[in-house]
Image 1 (cartoon, rainbow, N blue to C red):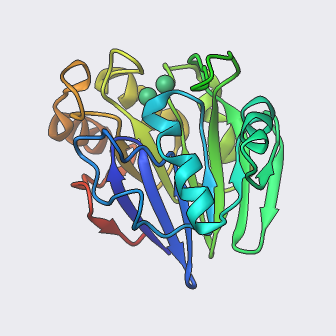
Image 2 (tube, rainbow, N blue to C red):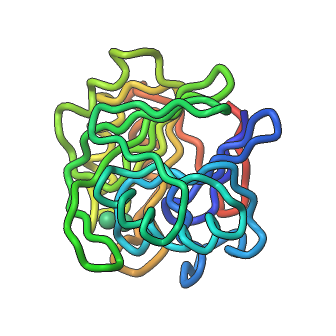
Length: 224
Ligand code: NI
Ligand code: MN
C-alpha cells in the first residue's frame, strides 16, 4: 500500500486500486498537494470536525460517492447532507471492501462546521497487509500505547506542530508509546503557529531508537 501526504493532516492511502482519504482539508490549505475537485476517494475517514480536517469532505463525497466514516455525531450531520456515512464511536470498527478503520481516543476538542461539539478520535486503518495509526489531533497521553496491543503498527501518522496539538518534544515521547515501525509526521509548517523543526524531531526519535521517521513533502508518497 502507498501513503501519499496531501498536506497538513491529510493523507491518501492507496492499495489495490482503492483510495482512502483521511482528513481532506485541501481548499484553503496552503500546503495542499491536490485540489478537492480532482482527488480520488473510495472512502473518507475523519479524525474530528475542525475545519483543518473536515475540510472538503462534503464536496469530495458528493462528487465521488465515497462514504464517510466519522464519529457518530459528525456522521449524523453528514447524513443530513445526503452523504452515505458510517457512524462508529470510540472503540468501534467499520469494515469496508478495502479494509477497516477503528476509532481510538485522542485528547483534543472538536466542533463541526455547524458549530456542534463532539469528541475527537484517532484512526487505526487496516488496508492491504498494513496497519496505519493516524493519531488525529492530540496532546501527549499514556493511552497512545494501547493501539499497538491490538496488533503491530506499521506506520504512525503523527502530529508534531505544537500549539493545537503536542509539539515535537512531546511527540518524541509519543513515538515511544505508539511503537510503530515508522512515523510520518504531520500537522506542522502549514501555518505560523504550527511551525516546527521536523528534522530535529526525526533525529530525536531515531537517535532514541524508537522508530524510523519519514519526512514527506506534500504530494510525496511513501510505501511502507
Ligand atoms: Ni483540531
Ligand atoms: Mn488540526
